[in-house]
Length: 485
Ligand code: ADP
Image (cartoon, rainbow, N blue to C red; front, side, top):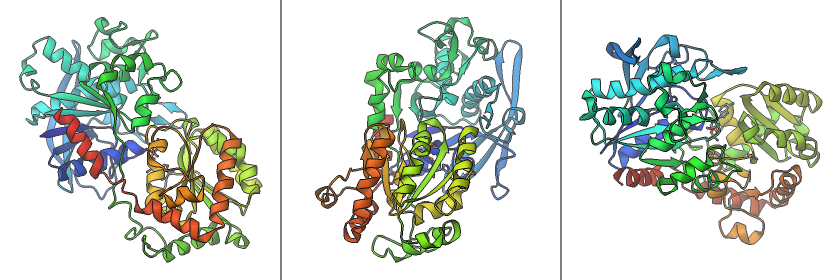
């Protein structure tokens, strides 16, 4: 079985969020369960690090986007752990400082960029003779691929035979980012007015790429079972719940894993001291390091909360900001690492100035610091408004840092709640709260504090979490089953 994984980001090449972790790790995990997989993604000239080596294998391929417009591109390849990554190099679209847009907003030509990307992928598969059983599409950027495939089959195009046995799986990592563009994009991408209707790509007078992925792929998945149900409701459906309900029988949820080699407190070279389930002494050193460097030393024994997140409304940053005074008032220390919306940058920097010694804020993207926070914190706070899967809580479990999360989506599926000692004995791994309110969040932190003050119980919670297996093994098996179906 052979699968093409199509994505706009993948570790170790380019990452803005969880999609990159998935696209980097899942192919390797699939390989281990007997699925041959390669990745196709854009070539981001200015983002890629010098250490990565690429080989150009095709020059000046072209796709005709419409009758009057041909786009030219090159194809490069790089191999990591036996997985080939094929890169579509078209610098006027992808050689930029950011993947999707600047902090001020999305790039205005994203509709063109990702129409081209979708069409170019099909060209690459054919040109390199990479026939596959399944094309696995991720998020709206690949949403037009099943639409182009449909066109090829319907219009009896010469490449029809090449794709005869190719199925498509479309994975929604975050339904909020749908790729909505004005109707004119249909002129550029050649799909034309026939898709401007309710059974096509039309969406409130505009064009919606994610809708294309949902309507025209063979199977649809989301990254956790709970989220796959939530998105069928108006509350979580981002106006696509009706479209999703029309495909309900082909929709399922497969929870993400994390790469247990890349995320391993026993081997992680970027943390202060390594530790393991059986010997946690290093974790204390990791915490001491953070306190000595970023906090007032007199708080060395206070519980430390870490937050590593995109700074966006989805992640519950408003809730954290609203609750800040009370969180710190309870004796917690808080370290926040993230980038995102400018309004949060401003608010958090202000709060930092007002709470020196107890609040540490880092507005940047920094993998090393993230690892030092995962390893050195006592708790990891993730109060998301909605959460398709979430990786932060899984990494925290692996690093023995107790997640305090809102009970939604993937957070519901991956954390076993502890409300009592019995829950801890039964394997509880974190604290969940239901309502998106400061009151509920603070109550959950009260519960955490009770357990934190009882060393034996706290250790048991840590060990319960570290004992869990959220590696990709199980999820890869589930994807294999889905591809086979
Ligand atoms: P998202 O919705 O952003 O994809 P996830 O929890 O699924 O959220 O994944 C986020 C990933 O990005 C995690 O691996 C997390 O550690 C990482 N991350 C987020 N912000 C930062 C940052 N500022 N610096 C380093 N890593 C970050």
